[in-house]
Length: 115
Image 1 (tube, one colour):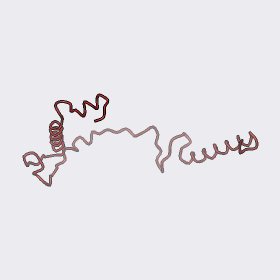
Image 2: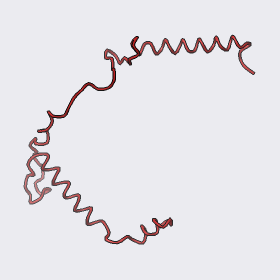
Image 3: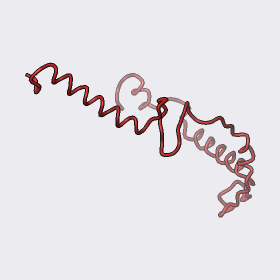
């Protein structure tokens, strides 16, 4: 049971739908099939670039608001040094919170039992 009286009507309906989609897509693409975004045509991804100009980015000076938050109450210096200090502090916390032997809960969990 079709809503069309004949196969020709069904085909004509499909053709009309395809033409409608083609018209809508053609507003978004160029004749070469490239996607058009406002006034820019994107063809094949991002333009070539590198990150060589950001090598000094982490050497930007950092002025801590609360010196007592840093090791020895000393300004860590630049951003790279501050990040290194934070990473080492987090690593110490992780090591302190890691049990030397598996707990009963984790052993049961690994054996397929819920804790």
